Length: 480
Image (tube, rainbow, N blue to C red; front, side, top):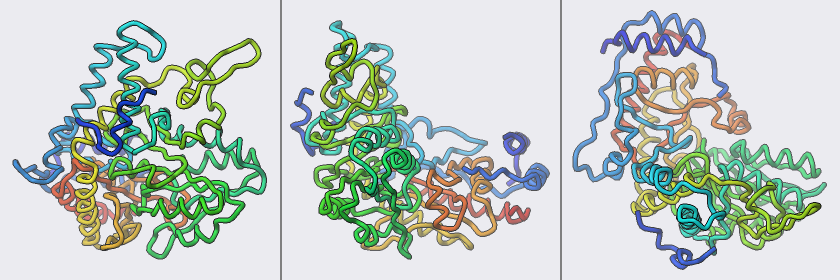
């Protein structure tokens, strides 16, 4: 299929330029309170001089399809558009999810109808905003089955939530000789804060490697646990390997030696039922924008006794009880950790996203995505010279619905560029904020396709055909 003049120009320009609530804890509802690899000049000359490329037809959604992806796709208006002459196929959900109309509508309603500051006014708009803001806290608490809403602290994102724990709990509880255990597959947001705290306290960081199946080695973790271990920092689902860790077991082993556990649940909360009481984790963080909610807000779950013993993270309005000239007293959690005006509309939007996900059902989402995950993995393995990272799926090993991969002699960024420019397929390339993991794997970067429940097998099929075409295109011009 010939490349149009506009598509040819666009590619050259790019290369030249630098519903109801979950029924898990209903009583809560009534409680008050890349190294980007620069595309080489040789690649630019070949691409800009090319006049043809084979392009598969865009996927067409069948009417009345029984799949969850087909049923929910119309709820996401952003997906109904053309990118570079092709229908958008969005496969970058591990970076951020798209937002349903229901969430966009709630955000619009807040700013048009009752925009006001929370907790600080007696007039109607302020009372309405406060009610909706605190209702969102109750929704989050019920969604992860927290014991009570005050165990939920709203933050700017999951990164800030981890920093809150690091600077409030970490600086108060870690000292020289103490150890923090992490897996080599952690996101930078779960590594860097603890490096900074370790530098100030004298504590040391120890890392758990991978098994031959490319899963964080929980047996090694168990062996490294000792009385020196004060904290274990671990993801629930890897954003690169797609592996799922047994958090309940890790928590049990850690508690046996007196260690606390912080769980990065950014890749699990949007895709499966997560029950913090069942996991028994001490801290857990997640981010709104990965679970169909707005950007600019995340949350920290912390056991109430731990939060109550922690000093403030930031000082200012809202987090105080009384302020005197030479000292202040502080509010109880969660207000203690929510200094200043919060992201009110975004928090309310997160509550709407939880309503939307709950109406679908997290178990239904999880089962559907397991099917998609296996289909994506198996489909990628049909491509010659490809390496997919992480464990192979089996009856006992479940992968998340994402695959990071490399193709021999091709750079991940080149693959992502051509997929976008010639096929309208959005994937991610780079180190995915996991440089230590990529070094462990012996690569600088990888390409990553990640799915959500509004994707379908047709999206995967189109991606695979587009990837084949992309590989043929790049190999033809020997770009490596």
